[in-house]
Length: 135
Length: 248
Ligand SMILES: Nc1ncnc2c1ncn2[C@@H]1O[C@H](COP(=O)(O)OP(=O)(O)OP(=O)(O)O)[C@@H](O)[C@H]1O
Ligand SMILES: [Mg+2]
Ligand SMILES: [Zn+2]
Image (tube, rainbow over the protein chains, first blue to last red):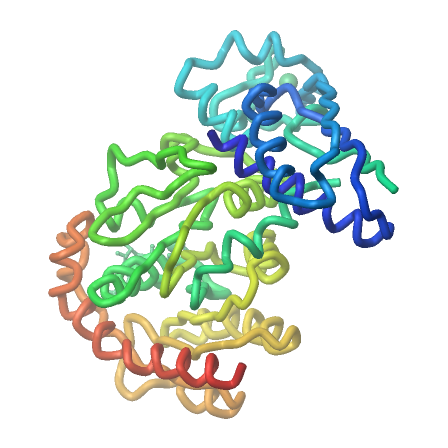
């Protein structure tokens, strides 16, 4: 359940934004979930709700999740590939490591065209807080 | 917005003292000192050891921490070995080479800082990679109240690189516990330079040929001449902490 730790970070970040923008009641948080990290939405929602219940300014907050498709780009041959291709080459233990630390992918995955280990996670890495709405 | 930096202060709230064992130079014994320091302090304190050398993690080899994995409980709880809570990138890369670019290094460190549940600690020791790269800058930027224990060897070549780290730490007003001279010779050629900078020379550790055979065996490491010398220097390190916390 490391989704719980991420939920805590999302609320802490939202709280910071709320203070900066003088928001008293938070109505909606939009959270982008990078495909690579394979976050369990059910657990994340459960954790966010449980934590929000203890925060007076968050009790009415709605949580909207958006999936951001992953893209990987080879630094050597410029080939790009997606999560579906990447997943084929990951075993169960490796996928779990990537779930905790997405950069672990760089230890296990190679460019599907030229075999280089030198590639970038160009899109859809992990969890980001996209918008904070409130009054 | 990246939510992770916002939770780091909470993760560190119950850690009394964070000591980054750092050096401008590679191979001077940072990992050896970080691990042995953690093991020694763990005799009387709650201690964590965090390997931040993402390219060449080695603290697990010194501790003999094979087959360990963090457990999940509202984040990742570091496994314990010889009374030390231990976190390392090796738990995720399984000892494979990780060809990381700068932003990957920062991402990895941020993720670990955000999800690791250290709980209550008297000391968290950070085993730093050499130099003033991403890891060092990230620690300076993200880890609250981090103090630095700087390691060097008597060589001019080591001190040349260490000077640059000290320059940056002093420019940024980071607390430096002092400088530890590893694989020392007598008399110390660097002591004067350090006192000229108004920094503490904490003492020296001998070159110890028996260390290699003790690697992977925490209790053995503590009984080597190296381990015993480090133990004698603990009061100097702890004294700094007492002084620092009473200044707060
Ligand atoms: N006082 C000593 N006597 C004998 N051997 C030592 C001593 N200190 C360290 N070593 C050995 O020197 C080598 C380098 O030490 P260590 O890995 O701790 O250095 P490091 O500064 O962490 O290196 P890196 O910059 O790669 O992280 C290791 O094999 C270690 O066992
Ligand atoms: Mg090292
Ligand atoms: Zn390629």
